[in-house]
Amino acid sequence: MDIKIQPGYRLSRDQKEVMSKAFQFVASHPSYTEGATIGRNCKPPLLPADAPRLFRACGQALRKEDEVAIMDDIPEEGIDFKQFCALFEKHFHEKPQASEEELSAALGALDITGQGSLDPHMLTEFLTTFGEGLPAEDVEIIVGALPRDQLGRVSCSELATMLVRGPVGTQNPPQD
Image (cartoon, rainbow, N blue to C red; front, side, top):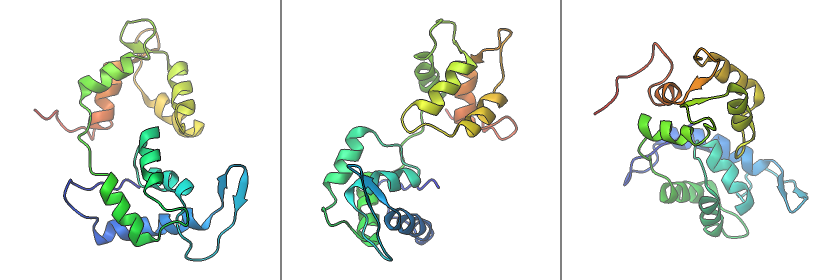
């Protein structure tokens, strides 16, 4: 699920419907905080420690400072769905998509050879271990589908193009 809203706009009815299911799931399932499992029943509040998980489920990439700001806005006893929607609207609006050049430069930071390409094994390890990491099965499919150069490496610029425009055959032309 990838919930996006424009600055100054509110969540749509459809977005709230989708988010409601995620809210109920996250709020109803055990929270693992400080080693303790807390089981909750029907129509529970969303507790501060569970909020980052729900924001991620709604397609939001969170930095540590985002997590802290969100958890600081939630009282210890938690919030209901309506309050969560208001919190979501406060903290997240659709952010401009990174350009191919920006992504290529960011990927270049992983390029230890300085040749503009990445070792597929290193890319796989990075994608499965950085932050929350992606499932290994998904990463294998993604990395396996990437074009390779003569040395079997993945081009940073081609990967950036694919990330911005989508897979070949679905690509949109670059926007000026």
